[in-house]
Image (cartoon, rainbow, N blue to C red; front, side, top):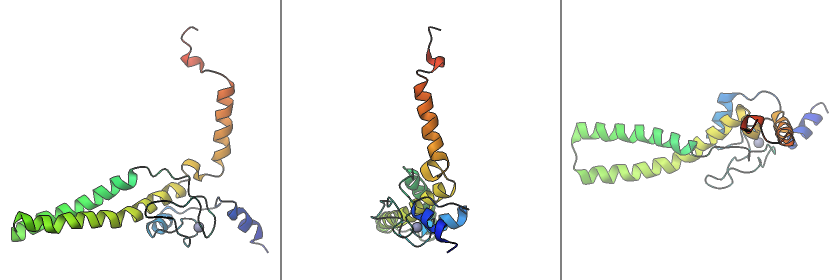
Length: 161
Ligand SMILES: [Zn+2]
């Protein structure tokens, strides 16, 4: 009985309590919801589900944008360039062999790494309560924005004064 209230609140969509960064990012990297670690984060290859199908935590607040691509390029670049240099120094293979090895490897590594990198970044945003992931800040932001609008144009922008 004691858990009842918190369960109802969780199905409302915003997990309360601690959000450990490392554990959340690990869950995200495993393509799981950062809040419960059970439900799937993605509903398609790179499409983040609007809400966790298991615990109902809202996931549509994320703003991963092109950060997943950026970090994937950093990782794949370091792995592939290191391998290219090592193989070239050790065996000096012909260029066609380099191409045959590294172009497919680059493509496969990129496609394999994008979802876990994106999952970890979305989970990081969730753990840090960024964007809409903070249930407490959301209404404050909207209220203050409405208040700013009601005041009319900003006096700093009124050059006639
Ligand atoms: Zn969940």
